[in-house]
Image 1 (cartoon, rainbow, N blue to C red):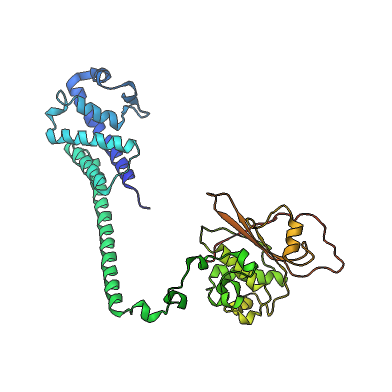
Image 2: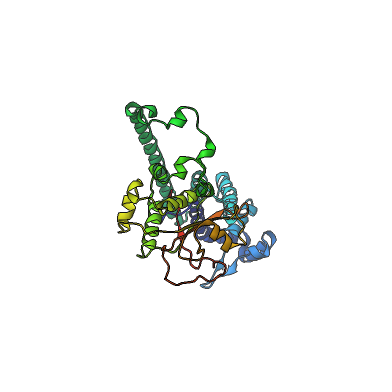
Amino acid sequence: MAISNHDRIGKALDLLNQGLTPFVERELQVTYGQSWKDDLNKTLKDYQLPKPAKGGGLKWDIQALLSVMWNHWNDTFKRTLGHAERSLVNELQGARNKWAHQESFSSDDAYRGLDSATRLLTAVSAPQAEEAEKMKMELLRVRFDEQMRTEKRKSAGTAIESQATGNLKPWREVVNPHRDVASGKYQQAEFAADLWQVHLGEGGEEYRKPVEFFRRTYLTESLKRLLVGAVERVNGKGGDPVVQLQTNFGGGKTHSMLALYHLLGGTAPAELAGVDAVMKAAEAEKLPRVNRVVLVGNKDLPRQPLEKARRHRGSDPLGRVGVATRVRRRRGQGSEEGVQAYPGRRREGHKPRRRAARPFQRVRPLPGPDR
């Protein structure tokens, strides 16, 4: 598993701690004798002082080690290290603070931190310098691989672009625009599907007429699954009784309900483009008679479900019918749409109870038809 640059700096600081601890203790003892621990109280804060380790000795923090080297440089470490190493100590203090505050490291910053740690460990003859050097070379290899992949993508993109430019024809020679677009009579409003207008017999022919609608509709896998489930449901072969469509704005929720509306509208499946594949997938030869009910939340009052359903279709508003509903939420909360399909039959002598329709009992998410 690849590690991040932040993790690389953390491992380098651990190696630095292991390599500097014996060197710092030895140099402080040479300068201050056995009382070197007491002199640390003058330059370190209480939380920075080394703590006794379990196996003996002291447990240092890398921040304390670097601070001791910086503060005692002239008295202790100047005799064995030079100005370059003092600059490395200062630079590593900044890298340690950046690492402790969970800041990110670019590849250049990470390489510089590893290189500084390697140089300082080498200067004090610490065996951990070899491991730090391996980490530095590994980072170089990763950077090289990334650069090679970037160059390959650029060269491949250039080759594809040059090849496409030489072989592809202009789109006007391949695709003929629709006559309303070519003639300049295109209107953006006509391309906004409206379930309520279609139910009232209004709107453009491409949405209002089932044959024209399916002729212009490409059945995606998601839309095909929705229609197959509806065909299975109305034929008593399974299918989900409730389907909740959740997509972003323009994801095709209304278009999906229009497809279901026209599919169960009584038009012969053979006349609808692409529906033969739906019927075959559902293992059905024909569609039974289905009563359709359209409920659009912002077009009719939801307080009178009996009158509303009766006004839409039939004398039995609570019978076994197919329902397509659109529910609009408050602004900023998106929209949800549900499609509910039932077989269009009813037991003989059955009298519906006069009560409001119950809410959906089971909801299953379904991707939008464009996914």
